[in-house]
Structure formats: C-alpha cells, structure tokens
Image (tube, helix red, strand yellow):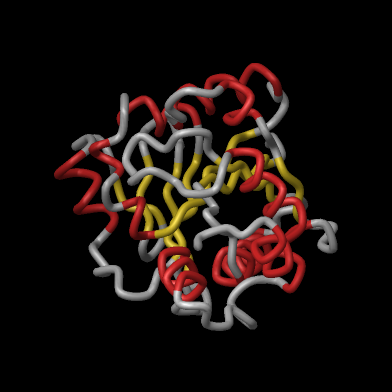
Length: 213
C-alpha cells in the first residue's frame, strides 16, 4: 500500500489555531507522518483575499515551523492564476508517484465540492478527509456525493463513502474551535486583540505588516 501524502489546502488569510488543531487531530486519527499546508494563489470560489500570496505563505510557515508533523508547499502560489484543486492533484501525482494523495478540507468547503472545476475527476486522483467545521450542517456524505457528484459512490465505514476505484472519503470528528479568518480580520480592523486565535508569530507578522486594517 502506498504511503499517504496529505495536502491541506486553503486561502489561510490568515491561518489560525482552528486550522492547526484540525490538522493535528486529523493526522493522529489517520496516522499520518506529514501534513502539507498549501496556500492557494487565487481561490476560484472565495471572495478576494486581502493578504498577498507571499504574505499568506509567510504566515503559514511561521504557524507550522515548530511542528515536525507539518510542512508547507508553494506549488499553487508558483503556478499563479486560479488555484484549481484538480490541477494541483494532477501535478502532485506526477511529483510524488509513490504516494497516495489525501486531500484534507473542512466540511464547509467539502459540501460545495460539486461546484468545483472538474469535480468528478477529483475523486479519481485522491482520497478525501473531511473535517468538522462549526456551524456547518452535517449532511450525510454518501447521500450528498450520490446526489451531486456520482451515483457510483457506496458506503465506507460509518460516515464515509468510496468509489469502485477505492478512492475514499472519510468524515473526521475533530475539536470544533469556532475561529474564522473573517472574524480575525474584523477584530483587527477594530483594533481588538487576536491573542489566542492565531499563533503569536502570526499575530506579530500581522501587526508588523499592518494587515487587515
């Protein structure tokens, strides 16, 4: 069996403790040896990001550098343009042919995956780990995928789904930290403290570069 290469993609504008705790718990639940944080260049589905790609990459580096389980990738940023997950997974397949790709994302993003570019192809390229997010409706993953992506999905475990080619989608129950990047930006604009919402190094970076004012 090929070892997993876990990819945690997102805008990370900014990265916060909710991201980090979810990744830590997912790695423990799935017994991963590494989680690769991958900031997007221009997310197709999100509103315009406020920090530059380079600043967001810097913040992810600062947030993860003290954890040997975490690493970063600038593949999407170097590719520039809209960051389509299917293109990223195809690129990673070529770069790491000896690994099984695992794409990690929050439930809020996953339950919109049918709107993503070439959505069906995503499940032929990687397994998926879906992490709880506060305030996200808990849809049944199998029903959602059968209704919106492909009727070929069948049940996997108690809350997951899989395709005939064994690409699997697992739903992970992680600690729900009700922290959002949008709330961090709102507090920053109001000159309120963001202590205990982001790592200290990220907070210092935001203050030094006058981000989100």
